[in-house]
Length: 144
Image 1 (cartoon, rainbow, N blue to C red):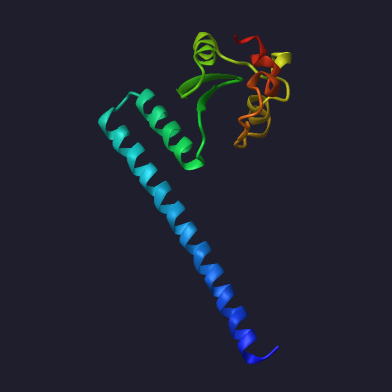
Image 2 (cartoon, rainbow, N blue to C red; image 1 turned 90 degrees about the horizontal axis):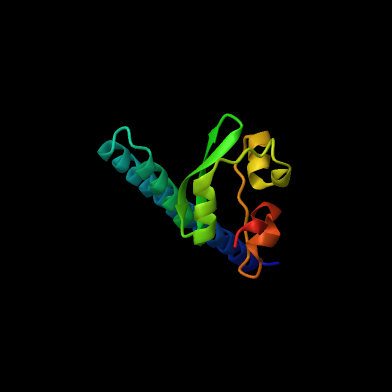
C-alpha cells in the first residue's frame, strides 16, 4: 500500500470519528435541552410533581423516538403509573385503577417492572408494530 492509500485510510477514519463526535454532540444538546425544560417546569410548579413527570416522559419518548410510554413511580414494592403518553385508552384506564406489585403477582414475574424491582436498573422494552402488546406481556392480555 502506498502513501496515498494510508492517507486515504487516515482521512476515512477521521471522517468517521468526526461524524461520531457530531452525533454525540447532538445527543448531548438534546439531553441538555430536555433537562432545561424539566427544570423550568419544576420552577413553575413547586410541590406539583405531575407536570414534572409528564415533561420527563415526553422528553424521554422524544429522545428515544418512541411512539408511547409510561413513567412508573416505585413506592416500596409497588409501582404506580404517574405519567402516560399516547397509550391505548384501555391501558390508561387499567393503570389508573391500581398499583402493580410485581414481586407478589405471579402474572408479573419476569415482566419489565419485575426486572426493574430486582435489578434497580433501567428497563426498556421495544415492541415492534407487528407485535401485539397482549402477546408481549400476558398480564395485559385481559385488556380489551
